[in-house]
Amino acid sequence: MPTQIEDSQDSNEQVSSEQWFICKRDTGICEIVSDRSEEISSSVETWGAFASQREAIAKRVGLIRAGKCKPQ
Image 1 (cartoon, rainbow, N blue to C red):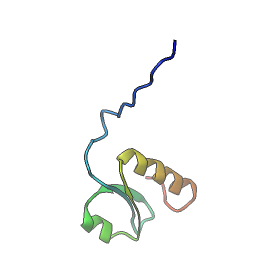
Image 2: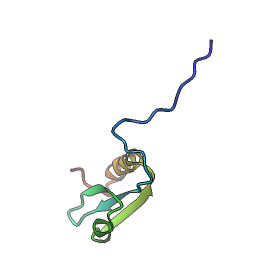
Image 3: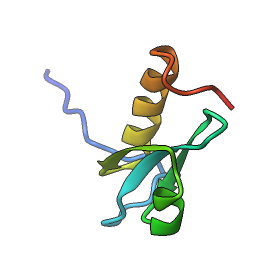
Image 4: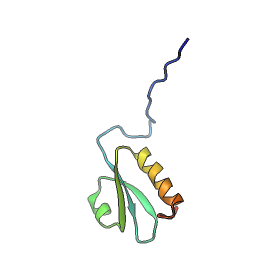
């Protein structure tokens, strides 16, 4: 008997049209922010926009592993 797998979202993740960005500070630490242009404009480098916070977190992990960001 085949089983169906339903797509479910993490209850901690907001379901909205919010976009997420990764902003690198002058300290080298990358932060994940949502649609806050003042934080984005004051950053050294920016990646995004990402559709979900989960996607931005995964990208930030990759940037840390690649040596482009320092871990917090």
